[in-house]
Amino acid sequence: MSTSALKALVVGLGSIGVRHLNNLHALGVRELGAVRTRNLPPPAQIVPKNVALFQNLDQALKQNFDLVVVANPTSLHLKTLTRALRAGCHVYVEKPVAHEKRHLSELMRCVDPRGPRVLVGCQLRMHPGLRKIEEWIQQGRLGKIYSVQVDLGEYLPDWHPWEDYRQSYAARADQGGGVILTLIHELDYLHWLFGKPRSVFAIGGHRTSLEVTAEDTALISFETEQGICVQLRMDYWRKPPVRHMNIVAEKAVVDWDYPSRLTTLKQNGYLLEEVTLAPSWDRNELFLGMMKEFIEGIPGASAPRVTLQEGINVLNTALAARKSLQTGRQIKL
Image 1: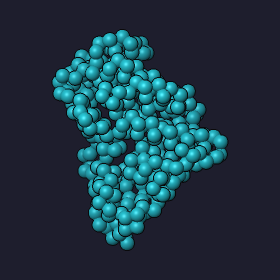
Image 2: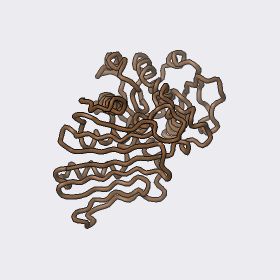
Image 3: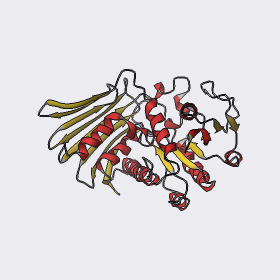
Image 4: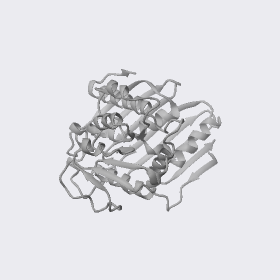
């Protein structure tokens, strides 16, 4: 679909909603709307000046938007996504799809394979380093993969220094927060590259001095259906941020390090190939690239990069990890 002909609505005007509005404008979308239920002026960071503002989603959906971007708190994703699909809109829904399993069956009843398209916003799938790893795997350069270890840590109060982190959705259990769901990108690319888990075991919880009502620490272990052993550590505590993946395989060892912008393929300690991102590279390129690809695919026969079913599969793994964390038991999937 031509961006100039597209009418797009962004639901939620937090930092991610503002990012999507500005990116849609940068991609050439000129008819833009936004839903903000709080009676506040629009954030000053919004670049387009002709955004139609609504305080009510139903009122906005009557304006026949083609695309709805779901960027409100996690606990509202499912309800917003369902209403947008029933209105006949294509949907870009921020991760995760939901914060619990309830009503997922109702959501799937709204999905028509011939109808509106749904993309789940796991934009790390656009990262050049991860895409190169996918290519190496498909080319057989790793051989049999034995184990994967992922380490992820960020200091939650530094995410949005201009606001009280304790009130952010990421910190609040009642808004679907917690490190497992909020930082679900890692589980998504682990599914994408290595397959679904057979079962999940997790330990952790609220372990730091942060004033949050959801888990801020989790160590998750699982074996994929392909027999790959995976460990994932995640927390809201570390400074500077850490985001790293190490793959041990039959023919090579792979390291992906997000902060240093470096991805390497080594064999017996010798560098075979590497991907280095330029200092000018900005993470917004991931958001822009994913949105551009999605819009250009409307309408189309090919599936979006991250389908709704894939989003639900990853959500099920995340919720199983949470259940394991709470019960101390291994959870089968």
